[in-house]
Structures are given as C-alpha cells and as structure tokens.
Length: 332
Ligand code: PBG
Image (cartoon, rainbow, N blue to C red; front, side, top):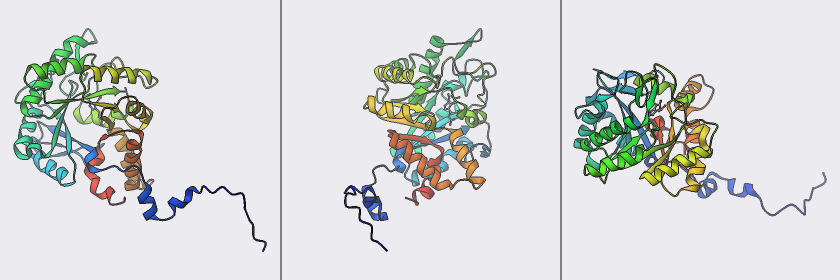
C-alpha cells in the first residue's frame, strides 16, 4: 500500500497533550475543590425527626438538634461553608419569626458556633419568603411588594443572624437597597466583621420549584417577576452587581447557574470580587432524576457541571451536590 505523506501537515498537534491521563492531568486548568462549595441546610422548627425532601433527594428538613451531626459530616468532607434556610413554626404577614432571637435559624447558628467555632463558615439566607403567609420576599400592601418597608425588616433579620454568630449574611430578596441597608445596620450594631454575600443577579426562574415546595414559599398570589430579574436581560445583571458592590457586598452571586453561565462569565470578567454561583434545586433535581432513570452517569454529570460553573468564572458554588462530594471527586 502506498504510504501517504502529509509533508505540509501543521506542526501544531492539539492531541499531543491529551495522549495520556498523566499528560491531561498535567495540563488541566480547572478543577472544583470541596473548599469551593457551599452546602445548603434546611432547618425545620416543627420537625421532630428529619423529613426527607422528595424533590431534593438526599436532603431532609432537619430538626434543630440534628443539624450538628449533619454539619459534622459536611466538615469531614472538606467543605468549608454551609448556607442555612429556616422553616419557622409559624408564618405571619410580616415574617416576624425571621428576626426572632429564638428563631429557628438563630438557634441553629448559635449551636453551630458553640460546637464548631470557626471550623465552618456559617452563611444565612436573609429573606422573608420562608416566613410570610403570602410567600413573597417582602412586605405586601394592596397586592404590591413594598420595597422600603421591607428594608427595615431585612436589617432586623441580618442583625439577629449576626448576633447569633453568623459569619456571612446573604440577602436573597432582590429588594432595592438591601445591601446598603444591611451593611449600615450591621455596622451600627457592631458587626463590621460580618460579611455580605449578595444574591445580586437573581433571575425569576422555574428552577427554584423544588426549593419552594420545601420551605412552603410558593407565593399565594402573583409571581416574583416584579423583584427578581427577567432572564431575557443580561445588562440588568451587570447593573445589579455593580450596585451591590458599591453598596458594600463582599461576594456577589449569580443564580441560577446553568442557564446563566454567560452572566457568571461577565461577573468575573467585569468585577474582580469573589463570585458565587447558586446551582439551584431544580438543576440538582434534573440530574438526580435523569440518573435514576439511567439516562446519565450521575457522578460524571456532577463533575462536568461543577467544572463548567467554575470554568465560567465562579469562585464559589452553592450546590446540593456538596454532600456527595467525596463520591464524585473520586472520579477526578
Ligand atoms: C429565597 C430563596 C430561594 C432560593 C434561595 N433563596 C427561592 C426563591 O427565590 O423563590 C432558591 C434556591 C433553590 O432553588 O435551590 N428567596
């Protein structure tokens, strides 16, 4: 057979560095680490035993006294931070349980800090929707979410979390001015060391579905489109992030993650501040469901997704996969 000669074949051969696993490991760029991940924890004031969450497999609504052992396991996996969500024993119109000193989140923070001190970064979601009977993220008057009345409540919530020992508070309501007002309130109360992770670019998304069922925060009227962002608009995200940085945010967040990798990329290229991405409940549920059907390899999918989010520019990832970290990192 005639030997074919490609004398003019280019000398650049991209496959050279892909030839062996060792070469690939040597030249890889991005790798998610356990210390990049933030694990969500749901605490339910009414629960006597952990109540498994069907739509977020592997997660339960935990009674306060169960959180310590859960967080111990998380720490053992090399995770450095958790984010707490509370489900109060009682909801009301103004979400007053959200800033009660003996509230479900406040008690939990207190226990965690007593037990683990600075071994774990305790982040808290600062929002009203888990605490209000109407399920909206702000004070409602005549069917409207009233921005400036809500700010005062958010200040109280943030300060109560700081008093209980939170390291970072994370306002998630997309209420205008929330970062500035919370920063001021924290400083006035002597908590200038407590950080703010702002849910800056939070889009009105269908992917929060499983989460809302857990905390029973599906709005009883309307939707969240008058405060969360319209996903057809990338410019607004940049304005929101810039505002939050100017108002004092230490970390900015993009949420959800997967349909918003461009926004994460923009955030990181435009602002040199830590960027967090929230890989939300619906994104987790999709992987779990497809894996259960045998349609995707679960660990490979997790690794590919989290690497993709990091590659887009996220420094931190809030993800329900944080709990499985050991099993999927084994595949690296
Ligand atoms: C509270 C809040 C929500 C999520 C995090 N904080 C729900 C919402 O905005 O409706 C969603 C998280 C998830 O889906 O994993 N405002």
